[in-house]
Length: 178
Image (cartoon, rainbow, N blue to C red; front, side):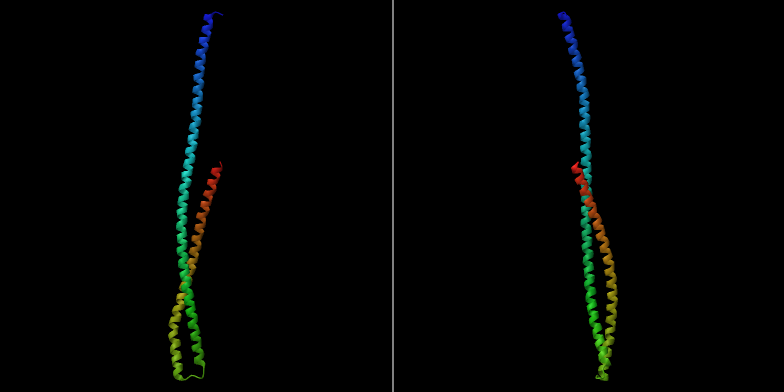
């Protein structure tokens, strides 16, 4: 082969090599860009998911705290009603015992007519407060029943919020495992 031919072939080879290498570089560059773009999209999706989970968690924690405040307020009201009912029951029992003693004393033959009048007047005077106490006890018992139901309902809602927080916690653990 002549040197001219030889140079011609080397020149054509170099031109062909230059033409092939840039086309390979161009074809690998888009696949690299596509991979990077897919990775960025994946990261963006994860960031959005984490942000959404964070917001949901914050909202549920706020609701859980409000629910705890409601429960505490209702529990306090229930305790106050129970205390009032117990005090009235004790007062009622004492008055009932006093009425019973007055009745026994009235049946006794050892007292005179003047004392009988006093006992009857005292027994009569105790009827109004006793009736008031009975009415108040009925009101307090109804209020206690209502508050107990309300407390149970609010505790159930608290449990639901807490379960939802547990679910989010499990979702976070699963996403971290990936």
